[in-house]
Amino acid sequence: MEFQKNLFKYISESLIVAGDTISVSESVTSGCLQLAFSQMPDASLFYKGGITVYTLPEKVRLLQVDEYEAEDCDCVSENIVETMAIHGAKLFESDWSIATTGYCTPIHNSSYKIFAFFSFAYKGEIVLTKKLELHPRTHALNAQLYYTEFILGCLKSEINQLLILK
Image (spheres, helix red, strand yellow):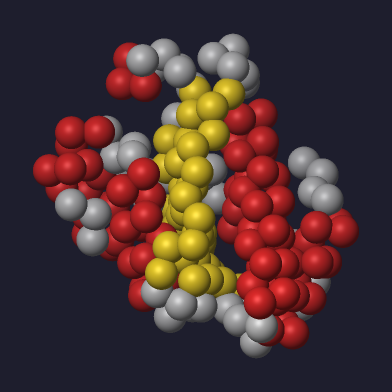
């Protein structure tokens, strides 16, 4: 697994300069984002930690996801991922929070599609939520790695926009 070092350096330096912290609440990426943040230069200065919440009961217990809503959508929706991002930030007391949920293999509940939702919270507010769709023949690990790199690229853009506005 090879990560983009320039992307890591940019995210790391930007968060340090801004004095911001970040945390991660993952489902579909199953630790890939946590691994990525742990590999960034000076990670301990901005990365507060992460949690992998794979099951509905854990999402309800740890991230205050609504149980009935989660049952209706198999824990995969825009609202679920936004709730995960907001409560992940509270759990870790971080400025930024990233959350992911979705599917890396095509199953009945996903209508045999591979897709993920991700969301960024910043200072208690959702700043970006997107849905990513991949070809149904994408291998599970490749899907997780693609989601991870795409999400980090989007994070770079969001950080850049905030730095410009400051």
